[in-house]
Length: 410
Image 1 (cartoon, rainbow, N blue to C red):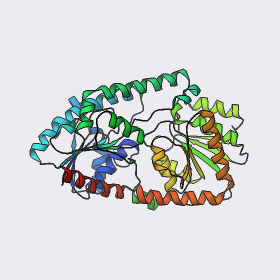
Image 2 (cartoon, rainbow, N blue to C red):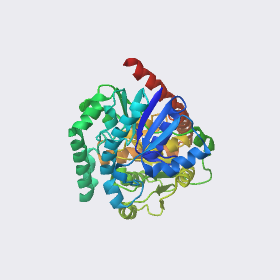
Image 3 (spheres, helix red, strand yellow):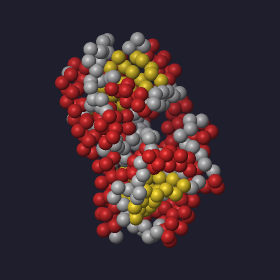
Image 4 (tube, rainbow, N blue to C red):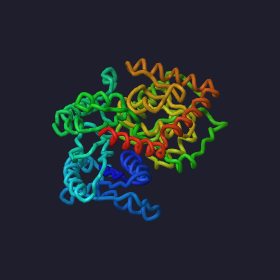
């Protein structure tokens, strides 16, 4: 089959959206001929990888509107402010480029892969062939009861985020994208509900995340011994990541012989440091700063339990990484982590109120600290779940079969 894929973010060796884009197109190209539309900002990384590891079925078409190339991965506020606008008009150009390609190459399916944002349109859906939309996420919301712990600035952020999604849902092109999808692949149940609401008929829920066999082979699963039990949280230090809930639960659990490591940086760091002082746990909490992916994996490997109390998240890749390393996960029963983690691999904590969540996280912490056998069992179950459901190789085969299924239904 001949597949055309829209992957605005797509680059080897990266996490987040570029990693999703690259791994999807690489695995799909093992089964089909693939043409990928992506931005010039990923060209150097892609061409360097293909020079070392050629993939004969994989063809790239680089494009940007008006010759305007923007590297969304840069952290400057000015760059980030323009990314979504650039992405929208990039999608328009991608449609016209794909029309020309379609006249030359008789594609069987068009597939939108990145960005994974359901409230933005994908104009390639207008091609006269079956359209797969996804993975798409972004339908997750912070439960209202948790707003009371936020600063005024954080509350405004949440309100503006909800407004932006609502406005996106009113965009007629977003609704047209949903209606034209032969299949919409949602990353979470919350996003699936929003997709149904805006007109998608065939919606399935499946995590967009994966780990390659090469990465699984390199992993050191050894659990640290002769060291205090260590909890770890990883991510940008933002209000909605819920680090304040993890710290409050750690204090409530009263685990005097344990440690809590935090990997990441962000605007909430100073407030979190103040919170550790107020809770009387500053001597047990270590802020590790921002680390590379390999360094982060190493830190997780030196810890026993991942705590990931994120309040709205389509992905939550660190949960997958911890499970691959054989570490049990404590997360909220929300968003992407709720899709990845099961009762066999960790604790999914209901998120009714902050007080209830903190109490339940603390109880899970005490349970895992007191029961080393449970830690090992959950860790082993996590490894098996990753190998069975989250390897990129398995996802590639899944997509190949999905393409055949969608074509047969036309």
